[in-house]
Length: 187
Image 1 (cartoon, one colour):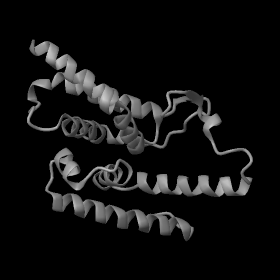
Image 2 (tube, one colour; image 1 turned 135 degrees about the vertical axis):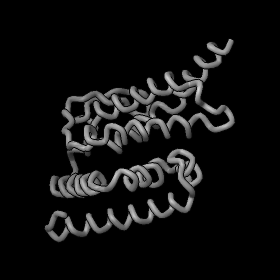
Image 3 (cartoon, rainbow, N blue to C red; image 1 turned 90 degrees about the horizontal axis):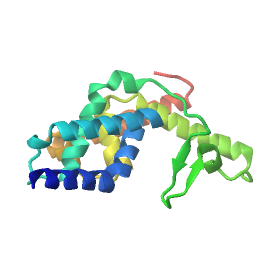
Image 4 (cartoon, rainbow, N blue to C red; image 1 turned 180 degrees about the vertical axis):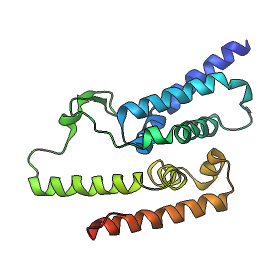
């Protein structure tokens, strides 16, 4: 019976949090394949350490804590800049699949507007990737995943004050890096 409960909980974890886990991992790694590997390794660790899970705590928090630690354990590998083929197939929110190149901005947009937006996104992603891991993961969880300070606190196993500090300091560091990039310098 315990095995059936475990299988049901793991299945729920994959179904309920798989997409969110991938988004979180992708924002940390900036690479589709690395994000998939990161999530897969987190699931492996969940299965290996299932007996350590405290059922009184939310399963989501435990899983995202493991995912974050997998990233930190392999940070050097995931830190490198990677490029994604435009032919990579992505699944949209509606379940439809399309090549990345087909999901890019409408072709009728002015080329300069599109290039400027892509450049801004690229600068933001580059600046975010240059942050310390603690700041980057706190910003991703708060500003991109919409997690509360309490959720982040449980995931990173740190007091809420520390989480607030990391988010504040991370935002300040991100702002500095973006300003440096705008001024033509690179830290």
